[in-house]
Length: 486
Image 1: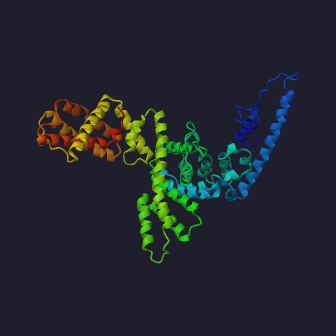
Image 2 (image 1 turned 90 degrees about the vertical axis):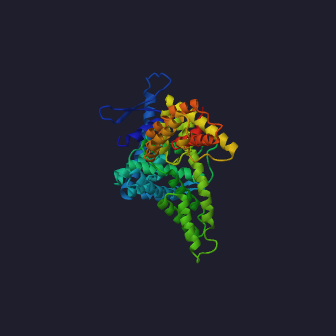
Image 3 (image 1 turned 135 degrees about the vertical axis):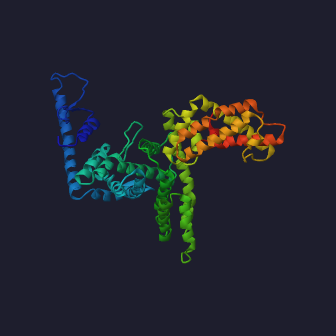
């Protein structure tokens, strides 16, 4: 009865198929219910006695494991278990669980600032979060990994945030699973999932069709839900790029010390620059300027540098595919998401979703839906004219050449919309930007009803085509409307 309630419940459920029964007065699990498909002369007493005996033996073993694990946690600390993980293989190409812990700890420290967590606590939590995998209790009850880590971290006297992260960093495990909210837990959970994804991308072990043996789709959805549920603003590219480089360094551990040092420098530069290209050029310029370096120095660095952008782009597309599925369940059309994915900042999931939600809301209005039709009409006329004439009409029209009042009104409406859309987009106020764009519906409709674009007067025709380009340019500030269906 001194065992954690989760141990009692798991032993009853998983090993014996019993229902555990909690005393409402004490809140403790004190009984069980089992089912037999026969009636016996002694009203089941023999069956019950046998079940009690088996359960007693199971719980006796659990009690031994629990007490032994607690003794280790209190006297030696969780590091006694993490050291053993050096001999536990995570994947034959991605190294041991200890190797993985080192990568996750580095990434958790980098993510901490972006999620409002203490960097030191995030790194500490990442270093002990998987310690319970070496414990006797988790060996016997694998379902309790993480949860037992919390108990053992508390017994070892570690900070409450670290103990909570030991349990919560696996979450969310499914679409209905709770999402961690504590900053340290969020940092470690993100680092754990991003390390898994980047690792399997680095060795080209991606999901194919319905096959996903390493649950990478679940990991990507977990990252998405962690970001959205906590309202996080993260540039995924930055963390993905750095972690891919770490994996490539591990995969080439027999390279020269100079090569490995160059890759370490690249990871540090990514943390400073936040942009892979700038980081790569910075380190490369230093390598090329080192006249004392061996001639072969930088060859592995260049190879990795050429691979990372492609791997990162492909992994980001995988995230976007998972996001489409997630948002489809939220009622947002896939073409709306595509229209937003084409815009800058697509690696910032929260920003991307905010833009998609605003566009979806506008498209549910008559002005929004009809504006898209007006935009497509303008875009089609303009595209055909540019192909025919062999020029781009991208200079903007001049109101002084306007002949119809509807034409003048459209010039004025575009100027007004631009004044609202530009600042709103800069402030990431997508609702205001979308509303300003939707306000163009009436003047665009009136223009097409009253004006013939392909006028016989060539000056007027070119001016009107440049006006259509203003429609296209103004609307494309908000989203790529060319990707919308219908």
